[in-house]
Image 1: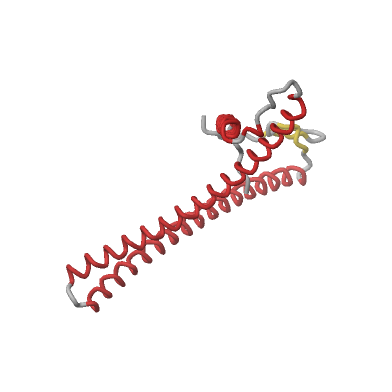
Image 2: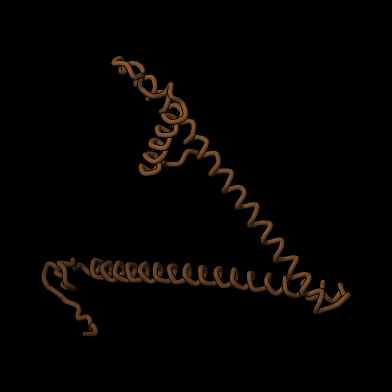
Length: 181
């Protein structure tokens, strides 16, 4: 997994690499004579290759550091568990059976809390599904009632012209609907 490199780190690495190689290895420096073109190009390409290798090594070292931190976190957790065990042992004495009972009770209590939280989540999801079902059923019942009402007028020979007004060949009818303001 390769991480994105930031520009300041890249610039720092390049400048440090150029400085160190120029000081420690004179072969990388431009020759004192006037033919500096090919030698400079070769030096720069070697420096860039070395810089790439160093950046790859930095990436590997970062991954190793992350792994070491995980191992250290596990060791710290184990150390805390051992400290708790010692503290419990000092409080309870040599009665390991009592220690086991206390520990088992604490674990059972934690399991009960987790199970209760899951049950509450399932109940909330069930209530939500039930509310959606009831709303859909109410919408469907309203649509069916409206369809039945229109069908009654149609069988009586009236056709709807909108806004609860119905016309027939020789008469008209309208239905008043009491609505809450």
